[in-house]
Length: 205
Image (cartoon, rainbow, N blue to C red; front, side, top):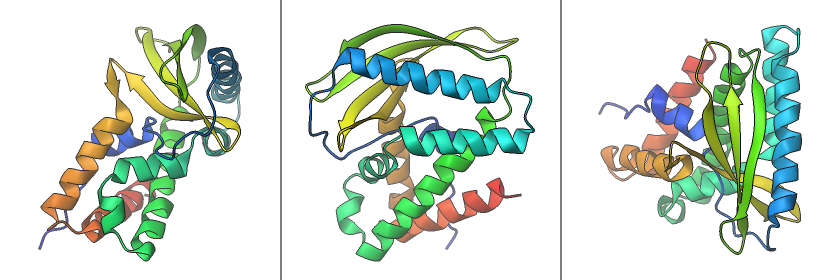
């Protein structure tokens, strides 16, 4: 049987910040969410626009992402109904692979950009548990684009839980694509794990 593959677009979608599932325990104030995104964005821009070698910038971006994104919640949300179908060992392996894919994908791309500008827009309550913060991102030679960040309170700390690009929730898109991979693999979570391992191998080259 051929192992289902994850497209580069699929995995970059997951990377471009698809995000969490574990319920937030406290209401997220829009002003607090905006301050968090402002600080995170400035930290990322500072790294991207530095004169450090690309590999060092990638490592620094990876560190920021690990601190800013609810990776476990994101992974569990994206796996969706298949989380309950997975064995404890498969759940643990999925979360391990998901973090590696997410960090490698984003760090490798973000670490190559320079001349990035980041502007904060409107912040508003989205649900009782999270707020939506709009940002405008500019890169040299490219048109400015809008990214909307969902921020929730996760264990008492603000964390990114979704990214909306061009009106599309990336974590919802990724959830659908991961589910399709599992279904093509005979409804086995192992099929997705194999596809993720293949992607990590490609990213390591």
